[in-house]
Length: 331
Length: 261
Image (cartoon, helix red, strand yellow):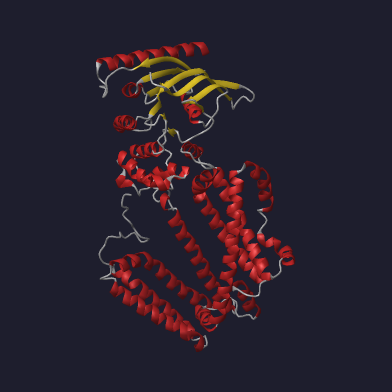
């Protein structure tokens, strides 16, 4: 519980009362540089494409200046900026580099690698379809993931707790589990009543394996002394399973949930590419069919935001559930 | 003498030797003793003499090959809330707060609703009200062991089994905790069976000491401690008992060493 003197990425201690000039100016200056790079090369591009991109620069510039002023009397914001600004600066400079590589020097072949302005334009112009695709992906992902987690937890606890279930279940798990869920696509398309159901089933299968495996190992490795203590306190079987073995397995279960989430993203995109006629995976292959690579990149940007948000939410849930581990292990 | 709270009669226990399949090692041989209600008895002996095995048999976590174990008139058939057990490692459930750990026995028996007020009583008894909502990993060794004691005592066990409960604590904490355990014992009049390898601790705390010699574990001697409490660890009679027991253990160690050589 001792206070840790925090330092950020560039080694400045966190207890300074003001932000250094260098830090305050980093984002606006980076914006101006990227802006300059863009103006230098945008001559080659159609003006319609660059309009919203230029607007974005003005917005970033404006917001960063307002924040630089606001932080002088808002310590919480200052703390946040100190942590985030180096990353933001790098991200904006990267936009400039991207512009230079694509639009400027044509180092990557067009139309496969559009510049940032074209991607932003696709994001804006096709926002309705992108939003709809994201929604469909979300529904499919959550239904498959939830199903896989529920079944995985049940089978994991059974395998972990009962030695006879383990005897029969473990070989099945070890043989069938490692097959990538996507390899079942030909089979699932025949069995399932619709492409959506088949995709949800595949995602559930992809999630089920790691969740079962990690839950089973967590439950079966419960410290024997915890179980002994509980038994001398008068615990019956239900208490031993639900109040000792499962809580003891929760750190392990979360590892399974994270592995399952990664597998579910992969399965979702593949299933949407080959069978389902909606969602972000479908959108990518559809846009590719029309050679609209700006849209392909736009969908990738959305996927990055979408998947990392879900991952972050799972991290938040973990932090909340495993609050008792705080300070015990390094997260 | 008052009615026996606990009786151990001619108990034998052997375990399979992991390195040599098919062979068994005799760990406890014809162990017999009884503990009166509200008595505090120590089992003392070198490591590997089967003290902890004996405690596990009484807790009902293991079963003897032969012999009988009785609480009152009832045979021990498995673990039960009437026989509390505290290990050297407090073994608190790390996912529960101090309060929830102490409640565990009530929850396990399904009586939390009617006995909720006792939780506060036991937290006060071990002086941990201020840490009710802390998680075990924030507690010091002595505090954690006090929680473990409260968690075992809340079930009002007829017998409290203590398996080197203070073994992992530093010398100062250890002496304070000895007084703490004695205070709980006097306060609750719980029958206690304490396993220790600390001779001073055994003399300081117990009504009676049973010395166990190893390979196989046998009760070699029973010594009544008739000193007045609170006991003075530096008094002449204390030190005389101490050297007597030490001599006895030393002698026993030598004979077994010769026998096995």
